[in-house]
Amino acid sequence: MLFKCSVCNYTHEGDSAPDFCPKCGAPKEKFNQLDEATTKKVYASDETNDLLMKFIATCHDLFPLCERGIEINLDPACRSFFTKAKDALWTLKQNAKAEIENHIGKNKW
Image (cartoon, rainbow, N blue to C red; front, top):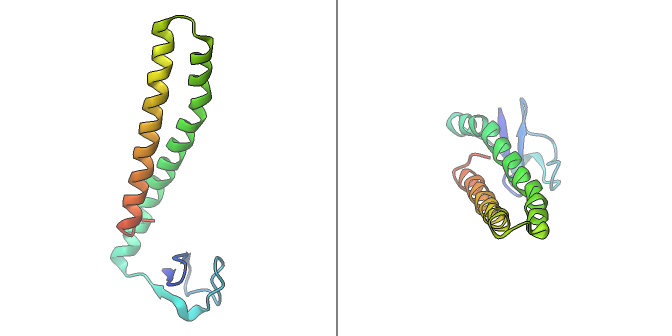
């Protein structure tokens, strides 16, 4: 079962709500048990959200590679490739963040 803290939105998995919220310290009474449909959404989106976070981290890790290619400046076409790649990575990273935000807005966290 899943329980959500009404103070900070921490989600707890277990047979009952914890005595105190591990995030904000709110007492057990501040937890609400999630209904079956919401619980299914949370579990179904867990792996997808993890994949999106890994994708964001990978984009972030590729920025230095693009910056180095721009810095080397072998020729205009090569510099253009790395510049476009860096811009595309930024856009992809922001799209992935927006998707996570959409999931959260639909109780898929």
